Length: 359
Ligand code: PMV
Image 1 (cartoon, rainbow, N blue to C red):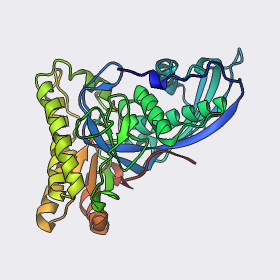
Image 2: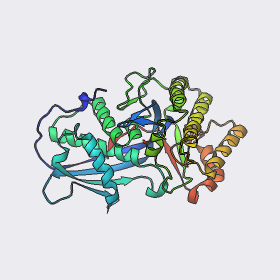
Image 3: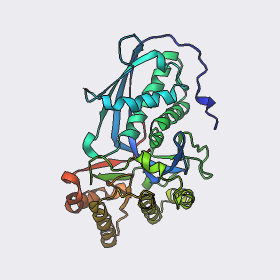
Image 4: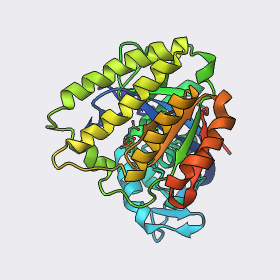
């Protein structure tokens, strides 16, 4: 795979300090990425809604390295977090070829998540997205060269992918595809690209309410879960399914077929978890309340004709997706019927967004 376009042409940059600030949202996959080869190359294409409320804001302070200070210091809401450093160091090692000035600098990363740290919402997509955006802004400051907007977002996505795979889908919105697929022009395994086709208006401002079922540490990390797709008895069938679902979903998004959307999105969520149930070793990330919510959603749809549907990421929390026009009724339903299944009654109302920005 040719990554040469991400290697800068400048040789040396003038050493100076500075500070940059970028925010990146989280995203929720409709067709799921599950299974990868080195380094963060997906084994099937995926597509996601970019979110808006759930996001990470990061300030990156940088200065030329001076002997005594640490290379990287991380502050989450003002408190030093040594536990985050190894992950960031690994990330910096992976991307130094594309940002050759990195090793000559020392960094203070000041970061804040809009959602509570204990919510069980993965902050890696938004966190790596924001950090990658800061690093490209730093590169622009040091080189004095401003990149063209789409080239900038491609480089940020490329770098974010090397930090956390699905992070590469958070740069733009409302829909981003990551992984090569014949129906999506310009799609790549190396970075996310905007979906590209025109979509029915109903999908332009779709809602996502996240029901927080379990807020603890996951028993099996997504890194371990991806690895179990190697040698998985159903992996080839699963990758074929994901490709087919992306073709079908692309049609659904263009014509505004809400029933087709529900069918594909729920099937994708359950296929993802079916892979976990049938891995060796097998594992289950859903909780009893995850299933209680799914059943309640199906009952609600039967009773009301609503277009509400669910999806899941690699955890027990449930994302509820629904058209903007249903927001009042669905919020009432969540409050009255579903909050009882959430840890401490907690949920977050989010919606489709447009990706990264300065703040
Ligand atoms: O980016 P990772 O390694 O955390 O994997 C994310 C995997 C899923 O959330 C389950 C699916 C996806 O496409 O986001």
